[in-house]
Length: 164
Ligand SMILES: CC(C)(COP(=O)(O)OP(=O)(O)OC[C@H]1O[C@@H](n2cnc3c(N)ncnc32)[C@H](O)[C@@H]1OP(=O)(O)O)[C@@H](O)C(=O)NCCC(=O)NCCS
Image 1 (cartoon, rainbow, N blue to C red):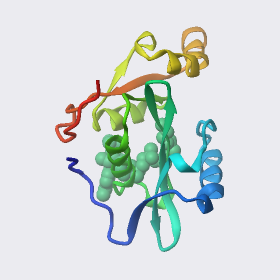
Image 2: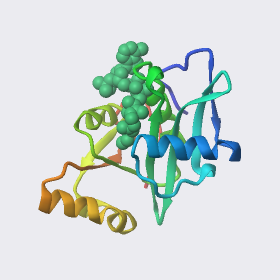
Image 3: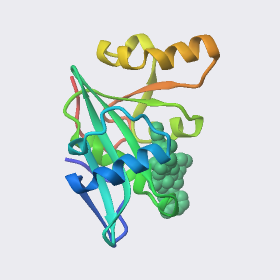
Image 4: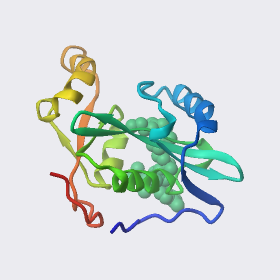
């Protein structure tokens, strides 16, 4: 059972992506300079308003893990709760322990409020250690900013599910 803190504005619809969304997804990911890996439209959820995509996000698949990624909200729709709504929805859809990589200070807090906690690189599952090895090297040797986070059920007080 999932309780959402944020409600969608009435003109917005949450739905699974369809193949017609492919171009919009790729366009948004490149525009926002997000991770271009695994842009399979089948893994995406989108929010649509008036026939246009206004937000998107996905769950990437790894061995024994998933990664919440490609979170994007069109500029004029930001700060209205769409990003938070989508994160909560993606959490509810995850079937494996859920991780993410955060390269922006401000967003660590954003994800922490949704139940993600920072973890050490060594605590990542091996499939994600492999994916994130370059980010970790940048952090270690070039002082780049990166925080790895894991979803901890119950920490936001709303999500009533547990991963093992
Ligand atoms: C990050 C991103 C997805 C957030 O989307 P968003 O729809 O603006 O997110 P929300 O509106 O849910 O939350 C943003 C902030 O606005 C606040 N907010 C939410 N609804 C609000 C409202 N109605 N009025 C004012 N503020 C509001 C939230 O509390 C949140 O604050 P916090 O950062 O202190 O938690 C969006 O900024 C984006 O697309 N950025 C570019 C791509 C990117 O960086 N993606 C993340 C990759 S890890």
